[in-house]
Image (cartoon, rainbow, N blue to C red; front, side, top):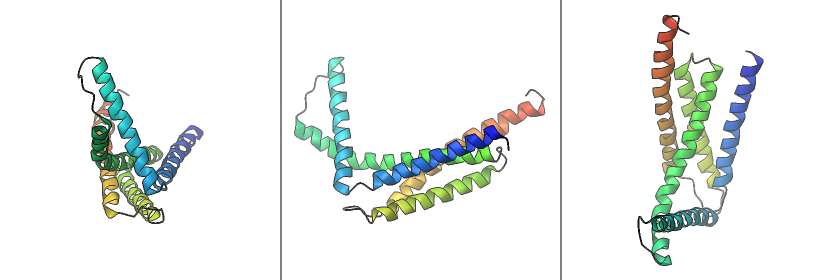
Length: 178
């Protein structure tokens, strides 16, 4: 393995490790702080969206604070679940890219299997970690949501891999174009 490839693999691996630490840091927030932080971001987004829509003339509404608060509460939990899936989606992509680069795109199914196992272990450990955080609990549903996020990444990556790497580029290599 050449030095450049080794450096890239180390950097990608560090990105994955830091991403996992970020997940654990966020899940280490107690329930009240975590819920308030996400609800505050949602409220700011709603208020800014209404302000900008009014400013450019799309709407002319001025809801009161209780209505915005009610909408923030309604959106909060589903959005948190989507974010659960998204952070593991990104983690799965990082791991897949790293493994495929390390293996020169030769052991694709092994990369997928390793990625899925790492995601399930990381998600399970994260939920277990939350059982020690005030007001939080470990939830198997969240592990399933995280795994669905990873499976989505695997599906998208597989589409890219099978059509571009295995299909398109291999056709060029066979015809000595590359």
